[in-house]
Amino acid sequence: MGMEDAKERVIQKLYEYPKIKQRIKLLRFELENQKPVSAEDMLEAMCFAKGDGTGHNSGAVSNRTLYIAMNYQCAADTANSERSREIISRLIPLEQEASRIEYYLSFLSENEKTVLGLLFFKQRSLSEAAEAMASSVWSIRKLRDEGIDKLVEMYDFINEPN
Image (cartoon, rainbow, N blue to C red; front, side, top):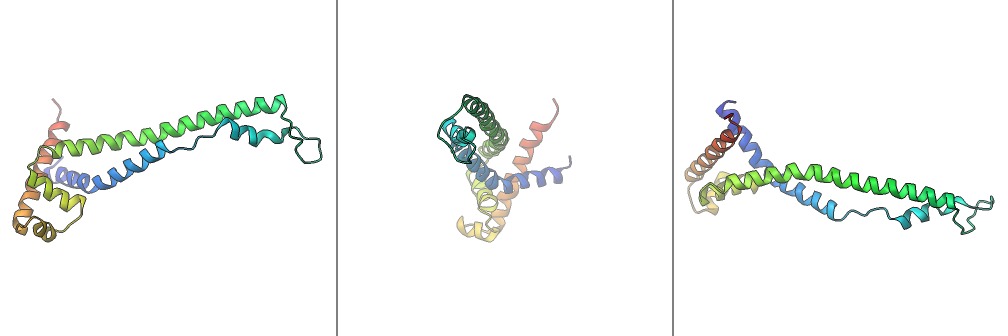
């Protein structure tokens, strides 16, 4: 992979970081706040099974209905479990990528981290970042380029064969 390709890949990762963090929060919320189907829900839904043929419910639940409800509860448990696995399978790679970005950023100088945070995470312009840091646009551009170059070296090092 060429240097420019690697640089574009790193820049893309920096731009994607805020979206990754948002998706992590959304998936964690969904995982923690799932409303599972309960046995009572299943019994209530199945309670219609033994009627007197007039189209209304006598209030009695047959053994067959209980068996069906148990099967549906088993299916509901499976569905609830599969939903959790689906969320986790999406969450883990996002958390790994966010963690990698955060770790690699920890090797940069404070100024480089601040500049990259302003430019990519907060999507500020060079002049806005310069103003925020009481610096010149040239200095901000230099810090940005140095930070990106260091990140490219880290990603390249990890992806190099031994």
